[in-house]
Length: 313
Image (cartoon, rainbow, N blue to C red):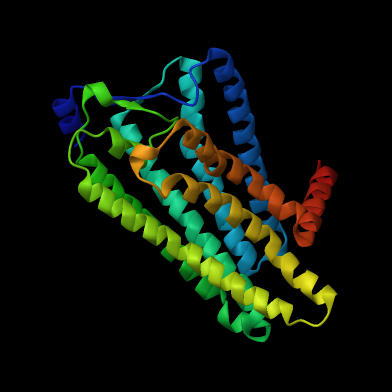
């Protein structure tokens, strides 16, 4: 497949134009991306360690949060190191095989994110609307099955996109990608061959991407109705507080993704490149802070872990 690409187009790599061509701004962005990547990895790793070390956090909600933190680490690791290496090496090129590989994992991890956020919304819905039946509905077996299904389905969806993308040809004059990573959206835009099948599949993927979002919205509408029926103000605040962190993450993630991709590829602009930084870099970095700072159980568990580590050292 890769040899066919090189024979038909005369090249085997793309040129990533990045965010800016200004050298001074590139230096600033390099250190900014490096710091955000390190914070993302450290923060999400801490979340995973805290949840694993505290038995009282071994609940369905935190099981999904562990998966979400792991995905966030993988998501940024798929994109940022290549950007940093290119900056250090003084090049903007990315090989065709690496480009497809990066695109595959990007789509796969993004889908895992959406499905996990939907699973977490469903968990909150059952916990608030059917609290007496929570542990009979949201069982460890169900959580494990959902997690496996999420990862397998996301990998399959991504594989379909990648195989269809590998059928396209690209002319040497249009091998420039106006981004800092290989985006399927922009690859379709610069392809020389017919992309109608890819666009139809991409449209279907957007519909599929919206399905978890609709499930989240329906869950929170039902949650809001149930919470408003609670007579005490304290009870309402307690119920809403269990959803605040998750709702913040959903707003950050879907707000930026939908703003960029629910449009034709030809309308993609430099502003959209900046907007994608929100869900590819900023959101994974903020997730640990959102869940730890807005969650009393997480704050207490983090404090215990840090005290335990300081005593052991």
